[in-house]
Length: 458
Image (cartoon, rainbow, N blue to C red; front, side, top):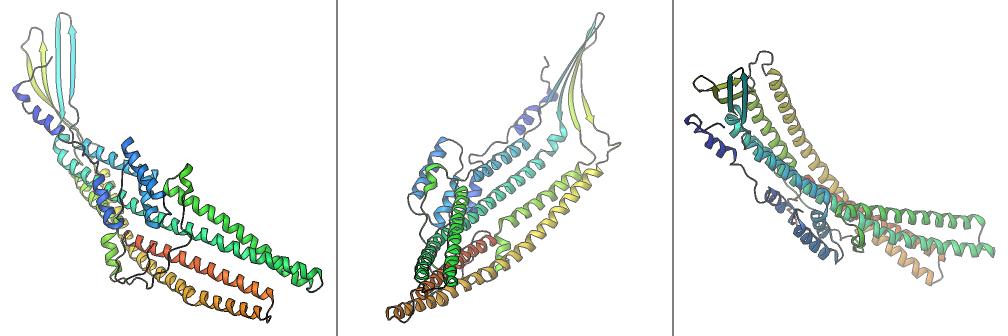
């Protein structure tokens, strides 16, 4: 076997350098939790072992014990959604690449034994990659930056799931509430159809008037069936986001949506705030910066792909022992690295333009989301302050007229149906408002820059 000589005294240093990279205790998860904490104020727990699973199960069951709110639903999704847990695994993959980049390639040992007649020649070569050693610090920095990029991207996925869960929550509650009012309209239509049929039998109503009540009853029944279908579909979509199955799918939703706030949000410097806060923009910036540095590395090594240094020791029978070294260098005779540099430059320009596109789109999304938010608020406020109160006053007056025998029961039923339809319109407008507020928060990167005070929050 080969003995260590003074020429190889630097090998322990190489071994130390190759083994200095190690895995962190949190796997990079703490940075993700910190990025999302200021925007969501929710706890995150990665599922890594049985203890984590038990912790998550305990928290989820505690939240499911009460009717869900938008905030508790988001918390359940962040704990229990397995798709998000799968995204957390990307942190481990990226950190493994980081640790690998900080370690030297294994040295290579070659042994040659040749016998020619009575002569025996033995050649031993111990080779390490000088290029890998030289580029190790820069490669580690690049992988560190890529790891940070993955952390930002995973945090952005957390925010996206939170926003999607809030939307699904409001849609599920509104659909459930819509079923109640659809049943009320259906019952009123049924009563009108039955009464119309009885009056037609005794000759007090024409066939046309009877058919009008019957078709309204048929339409109301169709609306009730569609409301039931929508309630099932929105609840199942919501359930998937929460990651629930089995008995846990029997969770309870509140009977109604949260009230409309007294005043809408007033937001200043919206675009600047979004550019500073949005994690997708931060990720695009990091990606572009990483590619710029990677481009520099590609340019540096364009002529040099292989650079190996080896210690050689030869033993030949009848001759003195020979020692020395060998240097392996790839000659850029056919490939001067121009294609690799051109590719790296194109990838960098692609990333730079995507960064610009992300920033432009973010500004537009903020403007669009705020206009949609204000429009949804104005419509819901119109229903709350005008349409629903007017319908109620009309219904009350018709009830007084009916008690005074000044109007028919059919007019009373028709007014009741119209009142219920107006309330149902308010439910839809209120749902659209809360969804629009969720979209607005998402356009700002998960956190609203609140200036004005609000009323009830979900």
